[in-house]
Length: 96
Image: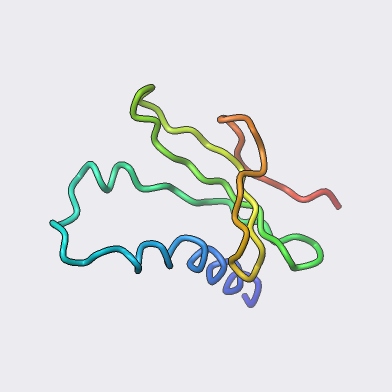
């Protein structure tokens, strides 16, 4: 249960902070805004507890499809970056 809380906290720090910093005086959220949101799933905590792998799906408007990539971020929420190059990667796992 503690690990789940740590993972959720990390993902919130990685993605919640930019959302909170947005200007609230703009127009209401549109359906296009909702469709354009990145979908985050499959968080996996590293064996040493310092990093999290997760799948992030984003819409490619030109191709009209969602692309999935595996990302990595520190458990402190810093240093989020793409971990794999393929646009079809998903369901990450750490090697034992």
